[in-house]
Amino acid sequence: MYMHRTLYGKITLILLMLFFAIAALNTVWTLFITRSYIDEANQELNRNLARYLVTSEFSGPEAVIDNASLKKSFEMLMSINPNIELYLLDTEGKVVAYSAPPGKRIKEQVPIEPVRTYISGRKGLPIRNKDPRNPGSLKVFSAAPIPLDGPAVGYLYIILSGEEHDSVMDLLQTSYIARLSIWVWASALLFLFVTGLVLFNHLTRRHRQLTEAVESFRRSDFRIPVTLPETSGGKASDEIDMLGEVFSDMSRRIIDQISDLENSDVQRRELISNISHDLRMPLAAIQGHLETILLKGSSLGDGEKTERIEMALKQAERLGRLVSELLELSRLESPGLDVKAEPFSLAELVQDIVQDFKPAAAEKGIELTILQEKIPAVSGDIGLVERALQNLLDNSIGYTTEGGSITVGMESSGPDVLVKVTDDGIGISPEDLPHIFERFYRGRGESGRVGSGLGLAIARRIIQLHGSDIEVTSTPGEGATFTFTLPVSS
Ligand code: ADP
Image 1 (cartoon, helix red, strand yellow):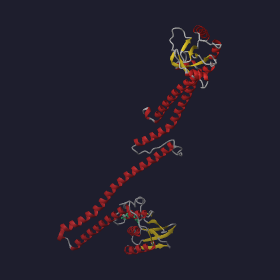
Image 2 (cartoon, helix red, strand yellow):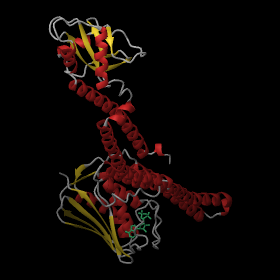
Image 3 (cartoon, protein in one colour):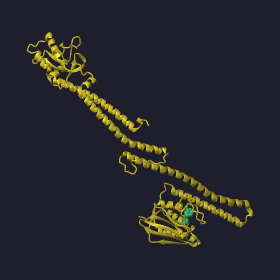
Image 4 (cartoon, helix red, strand yellow):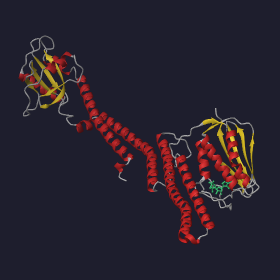
């Protein structure tokens, strides 16, 4: 990975540029301050130099500017302190006499305003002015009027720093303070830079780990969830931890959804093949009977003809039932369906249904009873609940052998009414038990009953629409019990 593409790389680059900028600014500032400080100290120390020279060289009320005698005293002074340059200015700032070595070109005029300001003492030091020998640079100076009191006829103007400190390197070489200050700053910045790098490395490491985890999730084709070693188990302590947890949750959700989608695709294909199979069987039977009648025609006896027509009719009825059950289930499973819940008496409903099933039960010699304590009215869609109960009873009669018994029990259970349909029929094998509510699933038990495999799926969906679920317990050979609850109407 290229350095500048990583977050850490970017932070390092920004930090580096920032520190270089600070270092550069600081160097310029330190040099400026040091130079000002040196100049100020120099000017302050020599504040009285010009005054002193004027007192000693231009004493007396008749202070006349005499070039020849001046030159002599200038040369004498310069030999004492070669760092100073002396100039005699008239009141306009014109250089009248000076102490420079011969041959060196000098500027004839210096601005007089800074000289006057300096003498008046109105402004803080350093005050700089033109150096006649180096007209391009400004220097600190000492100055005094001639004579010291009374109207000035000229000024003694002393450039203090000579030609030193003209460059930054000069200043750095000469000023210990400047060097020290720059070193201290450079070390502080270096320390900050290194600390910053270590800190950012620590912070971005977790960010990097997170990115790698998400990347490996993508590489796994969204199949292996994001796992974060540092946060797993612990509580999120900051935004990166939180981001990690959210990613981890999200990855699990994505995996679940992908597998749901895949499952539902498999289910859809299974469903289509089941439906086709279930529709084809009765259709083939009908076709077979009709073809026999057509081909054999008059050679078929009346009895057999009627029998075949009756069998074809039975298959047609089965087909019709299958199609209407399919339609019913698909309607119940449509997402926009809303249950019209209203209060009704479950006891009365069960009474009516049991009444309807009595003849079918009696045909098989099955005893059908209601076991009921006093129960309150329940809330639900009476038509749908009736359908669910019919499917359960239809199964119980279908899977109970001759002479068996079936009970429908109802009892209060907290905020609900518990409904129990129990039979002592053939029961359900443990292998079938987890699947019997699936669409088209038919148990392997020998019952002789030809069902569609949709009855329990419909019943369960109805009860689920009422916010509950159907449960089943069974011992093979001893019977089965189906239980569900309905809410008491408030
Ligand atoms: P079917 O049309 O086959 O009855 P259902 O969805 O109603 O379809 O039931 C699914 C399967 O559950 C049945 O094939 C049967 O094996 C089993 N089953 C349902 N009710 C009972 C019961 N009361 N006793 C034993 N087995 C049952």
